[in-house]
Length: 91
Image (cartoon, rainbow, N blue to C red):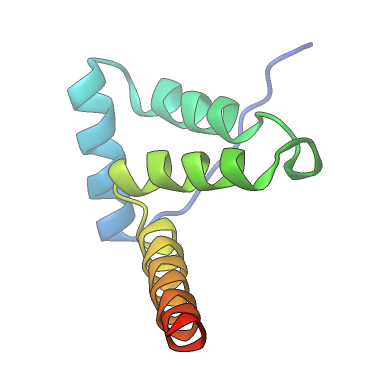
C-alpha cells in the first residue's frame, strides 16, 4: 500500500498531548499518530465480551482518556447502586 500525505489540524491542547506522547516514546509526531491509529484498529467491538470491554476501558483510562475515565466512573456508580438495591432485597 502506498503511503499518502494527510494534513490534520489540532488544537493547542491536542498538539501538546501529541508532542508529549511522541517525546516520551522518542518518536516523531507522525509515528505517534500512526501508532495511535494502529492501537484503535484492534478487535472489532462485536468480538469482545463485557470483560474485554471493561479491560479495554481500564487501559484507556490509565492512558489518560477522559471518556474512558467517565465511562468507568459511571459503571462503578451503577454497580454500587445495584449492590445497594440487592442489599435491600436480601435483608
